[in-house]
Length: 359
Image (cartoon, rainbow, N blue to C red):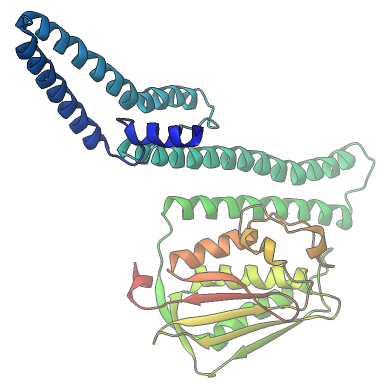
């Protein structure tokens, strides 16, 4: 019985959630007219003075108007309070969104905006914390080496200087990656697209990666990982910004090498895409792979993967390489993602080519 009464009240409410604000205002006007007409009819039948009927009509109209206005302005008052809280840095508050009229739609949009602002604020705080941590680590290492040399604890021999050089190089890479991301975010990195042959281009990138992994100065060098190039057809050409694409491939290969098992194999595969000038790239490794639940986070900044994804050559890194690769691909209007693979990890990159690259 109580449920039936509740449904009847919901049906009779002037601000029913299924109605619009226009319907509520229309109901207000109709209700006022009906009440006034009824009172005039009563006055005629009972010989009541017109002044009394007028007073009662005004009072009834004011009560109805106040009731309707209270319901209409309640969401606006709530939004005002939430806005003031957001201005003070509290992005957790939300507006009640139980209505389905225009104010309900406004409340839903307001809540989405508040959620976006909360996410941006959280990301900003995490970015500052992560950047501070990443900068502090190489600086602390470099400072320790130099203090030992100055205090006479360590001699300024080639090995000590190589340690200092590695910390300096790590710091330089981090600063360069942060600058790249800043330029990409601000849209100040132009694309200089040109046509080039894919085989010699990728072969040059793999040669650079092989030389870097064979360097004795890096304590995490992976001389045991074999790099393989597969381009079909051999005369395949692409139309893209060669420098930005170099960042994509180099970062993907470096990430694959780090996560490869001992004596593993990393394959870079290139094919023609669906369009006449498009390019489809794949970088495959034989490492532990990426769990499906973690794949959407692979290209986030400062994401290094879980402990189960760490390979023999993993040094922690900065967690920016794949983020830069994603932004460079986005600049081309392409797509990048983790694809299904029977073993290891397979990352696919698709570049559309064509006029968009010429911006």
